[in-house]
Length: 160
Image 1 (cartoon, rainbow, N blue to C red):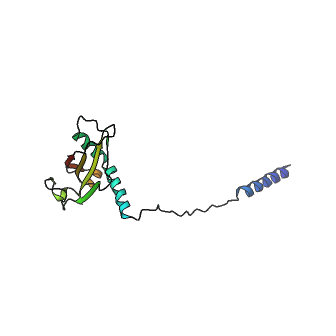
Image 2 (image 1 turned 60 degrees about the vertical axis):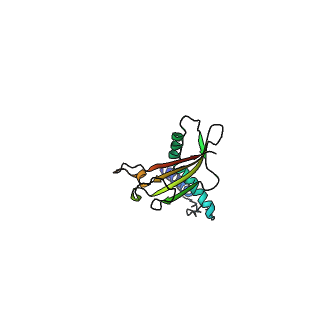
Image 3 (image 1 turned 120 degrees about the vertical axis):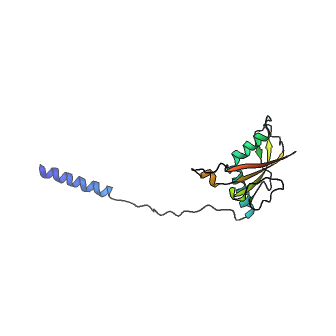
């Protein structure tokens, strides 16, 4: 009886191990395909412009709401062309009369053209915002300076 039990267990083990040890390996190396980027510099500039608008969206909205206090401002649109421009602070090329701080305190200046709109979609103005930016201050844990990472230096408004 012991021989039959041992033989049965042994035969069962061999049968189970035969089916469970068959391993079919899948191909583990996958080729990563990078997304196709635009080759046109015009398209790349447009995408970069949208990125800059999105990056500073909070500051843009705050500046618009501060300028149009008491008016129904629900958002803004960007013009079709040339809605942003970045320059080095040391170039100081935006407009005469704009007050920029010392070149060492900010990395670049940013000009953004927008069309603020109300809840019915009516454009309230052709506005140009001038910011000075120091991106390293947004990541700084131990801030030794009291200067903000981004600062509005001029808000220019004209009728639509």
